[in-house]
Amino acid sequence: MGRFLLKRLGLAAITLFLLSVLVFFGAQVLPGNVARRILGPFADQAAVDALNEELGTDQPLLTQYWDWISGLLTGDLGESLALGVPVGELIGDALVNSFKLAALAFVLVVPLAILGGVVAALRRDRLTDRVITIGGLSLAVLPEFVTGIVLILVFGLWLEILPVSANAPPGSGFFTQIKYLLLPAFVLVILLFGYIARITRAGTIEALDADYTRTAVLKGLPRRTVIQRHVLRNSLLPTIAVVATQTGYLIGGLVVVETLFNYPGMGRLIVTASRQKDLPLLEAGVLVVGIVFLVAMLLADLMYSLLNPRIRYSRAE
Amino acid sequence: MTVIEEPGAPILIPTRDEAKIARRERLRLLFRSPTFVIGLVILGFWVVCAIFGTQIAPQNPQADDILNKLAPPSGDHLFGTDRLGRDVLSRVIVGAREILIMAPLATLLGTILGTAIGLATGYYRGFADEASMRLVDALLSVPVIITALLAIVALGPTRITIILVIALVFGMIITKTVRAAVLSERELDYVQAARLRNERGPYIMVAEILPNVTGPIIVEFTVRLGYAIFTIATLAFLGFGADPSIPDWGTDISEHYPFISAGVWWAVLFASLAIASLIVAINLIADAIAQTFER
Image (cartoon, rainbow over all chains, first blue to last red; front, top):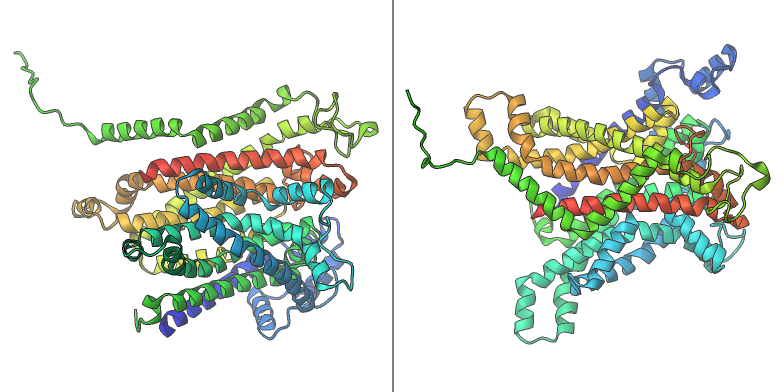
């Protein structure tokens, strides 16, 4: 198992390095002069030169990449062009906010989707199953701003149950903050429900069809006991590992949800940086998103190998 | 001299005909699937709007009428008017065009790219395969929407940038699917036989393997088409539409969602429902196609 995880860690490190190269060269090397692109065609040449010097974009490319990546490794992410504040601070605050929203979404979606998946599996090929699987997947493929707008209209504007903004008044308590985060979290719940429910359904069906379940039924155990002890125990553990692989969709969702609800997280930070052509902030932001994704995938691998005896006890590949 | 025909000779059905029969059978199954038919009807409706939109639309979607701005739905304007007094119904109808041109183009390019790379890496394996898979993983470790934002900042928010970045990212995803399919095909006897006949690599890939992996490629194309619409609409919503002067669902929503808290729901709801119906329709079609290939 140690070897399996070490290999995964190595691959993640290589992937991260390649991502940093792609991000850096993608943003800075592509046609033309960085400062000219930021300032526009009508800026005067002196201003363009000054900005290039400030950004270090007058240096050779490899020097630039080295400065950037060594800065990143020592925790110095540079300064935001638009705001004049260290990028590290901006990203730190935004990450905490995004994490709050994502955590609430996961707390809501995991039990709901597992319940949905198990119910669908137990009612396989009947109406309930169709409604849960087709409905769940149809909702999951909708853009987040579409589901977000419908939720805002229904719960915020017509029923007036939930606040339309995601930002609780400053100094409000834990539960008030959660109340303000509910609508944006629901959008993410809709995004993630279909896939997690589908995986749970597949795992449960596999366990239902397994020989050990048949044995349990044939030796006369009550249905309830069979499902609790034999089916769910075997089907739910892999599902929990699968949840971590949804982080990619979640981050993509955060970009839109945070913009729609004007919530100061990582997603909105990246959108704002793009609008203002704030390259240092944007590049660091994209790389941080990549790191979060790769860490989540490693966690998924770790959980999967801890839960799966075939990997847990294997010594070498 | 007379040529004697032999009517009793055993008739060998060429494989080409068998393939044709299988295809016809698959089509018949598709049209019997209710999800496919529903999806096709909705998609057909939007395609008609995209082509004949300006003739169907009750009013000019670009005509401002500032005195009548943000008017709720009424007899004159069934879906109300937007912040410049333009007719929302007409904009929803004509707005289908932009996305129904860009999304299929991007998806088609991505499918060609992904098929080519997937065939080559899966067939030849080796170091180039390993290296390109690492690059693919790196590119896919960031959500497509963020990659697209980076590309737009670097290259400018033009149609070409948006189409190319989506084609590139989706091409990488399709590469993985095609490569996986090729990996299992290349071990089969017909590929070995072609190799023993001394066929060249490109011929084996295109003439032997490709016809046997079209199923996953077609399924992947339809699924990606849905996501291309998703991504292009989302970019427009974030304010990175290709051309703000053209009626477009995402751009219209982007311009009007700040008015929601003032009670102006019509300027965003109808365009949202239009996007939702189009994406769900394509996913219903994709689902039905995937099922016919699974049989």
